[in-house]
Image (cartoon, rainbow, N blue to C red):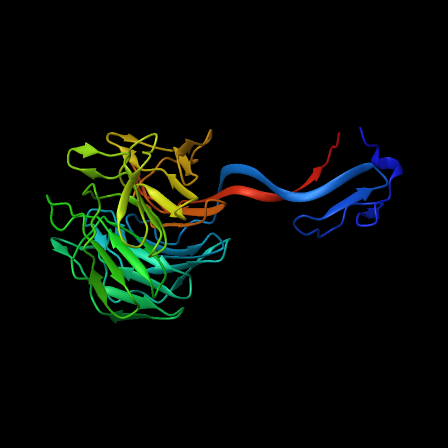
Length: 334
């Protein structure tokens, strides 16, 4: 055992109290407590309540990160359900209404950041499947070139100028395996399609490195996961629990999946993908729901906002996921 109480390393700061604002990887010796300490990321893997959205709704699109997110479109339940064009911006604490989309719709997909987003596809009541694409510059939405295949309940990955769209449905009974790529100006239908055609699936990653997971082809619900390398889809290890209307975000090698439903059950489950396999997290969402508005962020820091709660209808609830956080740790040696 090395006794640090009598050692004053040349590269280790000796202080009487812990630094107020340490940096990641910093190590110091606290002469008051006689402890060697460091500042490192520690796994937390928990959900906590965030600020509610202003417009309760479900099945919208989202973009950004946990502390700078955008939520748009969706469905507002009621005696006369209506699709929304409403857009809200999240600063990590509260949501603010900003300028609305040009085309109101639900079951659309969003990619990009809070100030440079893309919203595309979706469904317009009562029977129209949309191929419309809109670009967000941080202030306004602008209609740009449409998708080649009008679809709803699909998934996507990427940025405002480099996006991938995959899966979904093109009418009330037909799912699609089609994949489209957006280059900032036009959509291109790619020859490679999903191995499992499905709707209401989850997605994560980028235009050239994406992940597709769960979903269904009525009546079958899949746990299947597929990985995209920019050219083709490859079937990889399945999720532990197949679900539809699932929330998903992150990257191809570090994804997060949460909520959703295996009818008639609504799920609170959270699963983490490490590039090879999915792992169930011991704790799930505080409120089980599906058809999120903004399901965005990373495996380490994510946001799940809006959605549908059976028996209650649409919701404005926001939950924030912390996968890991910087924490002062007492170091031991031997």
